[in-house]
Image 1 (tube, chains in turn yellow, green):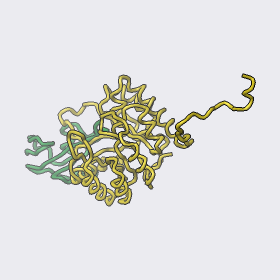
Image 2 (image 1 turned 180 degrees about the horizontal axis):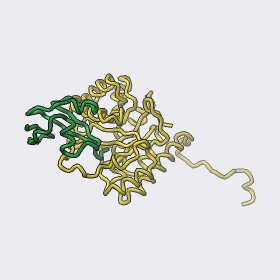
Image 3 (image 1 turned 180 degrees about the vertical axis):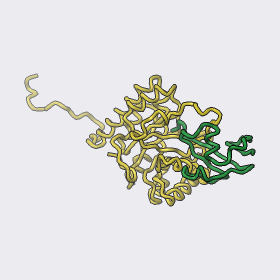
Image 4 (image 1 turned 135 degrees about the vertical axis):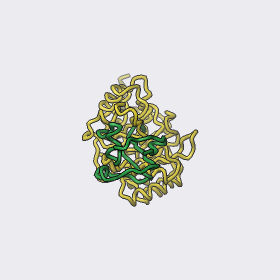
Length: 255
Length: 67
């Protein structure tokens, strides 16, 4: 079971809601994934088109916890403003703090992320910061009181998988709150590896939304995350340089 | 009155006096939307008592797909 602040979840997959080919495929992918946490962005409404469809309105909101992000923010001040707007919807009190420091790599700004997290924690939010895989920064965020730490596997939407498994495993090793590997996951193998390293969850979006068949990929990610978690709990064998026979050595004289 | 909504100058009829009127005017009352007036977030229960003035800067935002 995944526990974030006061909330408990059966699924360890957190799913983004951007970039799907259409709402029907998206709805099916969300259902098949088994996720209980969906991320959203906050943006200006087109007030001249009130009947424009919105994915949120197609969801049974009792089934999902919403995790709005502060995407678009480049400073702590902007992130705090977006978070307050999201909370004012009355639909959520969790926030994914995302403060981008570079438009090309979309890597998070560590200083502004830390500042925004401190303010939002003070205001009573359940705070999940998207951070780089810096081990000490993760430690500082958890010492602040963040309810989960979300280190990136690799740049957002890049599908490069876990570039620095050592850092991710060090973050997990020191963690006192859940670690959710966020961003950069490309394939089910990447998600399984995150879980085998001991992550508490995986947050992904493009890997499913951008797959040739998003619904199948949603299922694959669900299974990969379950398999990875089971593997972690089961405890893998150590790697050895040479072979060790699986069949017994006794009774060899019959050959 | 003329106010700025989401960055655009918009001319409103006399009948629009409050945030609640504004949302009705644009048929947004049943939408999941959040309203900010001059950088202050307006709680839903205050929509009817929050009056708008000429030159106010209003943001009407909602949730869209994102990761």
